[in-house]
Length: 312
Image 1 (tube, rainbow, N blue to C red):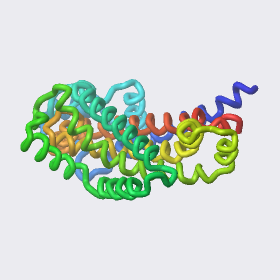
Image 2: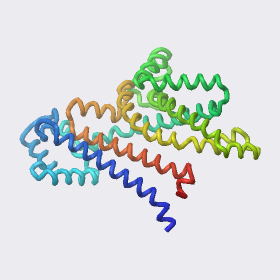
Image 3: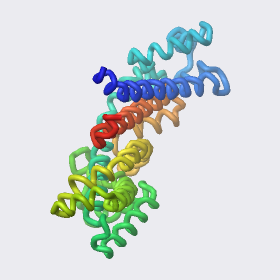
Image 4: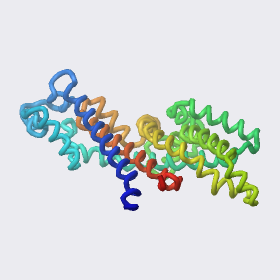
């Protein structure tokens, strides 16, 4: 029974994740079938329109069957990993997206890791009222970063570090150095917002009674901050980090264009420009799946950070 009780939070979160995925897939499907004009034309997009292609679309999407059957067949195909076919590119959608997923994943992971690392460093160094001048300077820098659009940060980094000093490639290069500026561009606004939240959490946690008790026992200030206080400050930051992942996905579309990188950003823009609806739908569902995965991991991280949640 104890194991069942411990698994209940996990099962609830996984159920919520499945519901969110279903809602995202349903919204994307309704946007397709309720769009003005013929559904077949929407699916074909700007591709070659011929009786053979129209017949293929009707057969694959089941458009000659009742609406409920079409919808259930769409969900079944998604559950089986079938994202459909791009009639504009004459390729399976999974193949179109799969070829560009890895560059976007590398950029997102690098940006997220750098942003979280910078936020932790800034919060630990300036939290707790130490070094007031550094606290004010860091807070000002964080406010500037949060208020500046990511594409503008990218253009400034390109102008200074690539065009002026030639330290990094301008565009088109796919080596490790080409990942640095795009990752920094996406990481700086994330670090600015997370740093503010973490610092506020540290300041509040330092006023808790357990801090006074730990100090009376002779615990060093740095050990107290890293081992005890930081854990209390992490919960709101973890919640915010899950939400920021959506911004990271949206920002990567623009940043990939600024730096001329391959990835889902170029696929999405090309699909929207060419009205390639199967690809657009797949990108929407894939983005929702990634967002749900990250937020589910954030929810489960609460149980690791705060033992009281496991007992409750």
